[in-house]
Length: 65
Image (cartoon, rainbow, N blue to C red):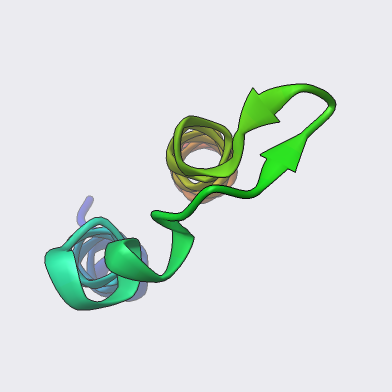
């Protein structure tokens, strides 16, 4: 059985990921700022990446359940 709402949510998360990890928004984090001694850009990059993975996991778990 297909889940059209779940599929739409996954497509929306994909589109959100493309927008967040694309140049105009990703360039906001590129600077000389340091957070806990680490540059902000890699921390923001991996933070966005981890957030997207968590959201996809939630959607997939709902689809299976």
